[in-house]
Length: 64
Image (cartoon, rainbow, N blue to C red):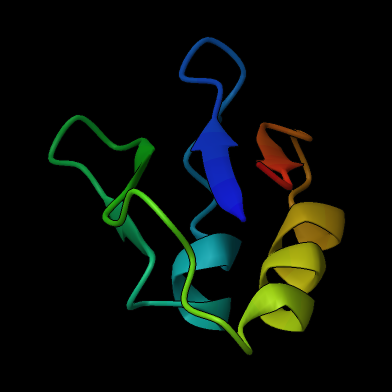
């Protein structure tokens, strides 16, 4: 599973960093970035939660 943040949509709320700090980080410019290229097995539910909780809907997930 891969996770992506659309930097043009991200509003820097930081909810994702609270849900999965090992995957997301707030960049110094105030927007979230993804720290890993692939999500660890077993973290799929956490990534779906981060995706659904993002107020800006900037997070997307792909299964490839």
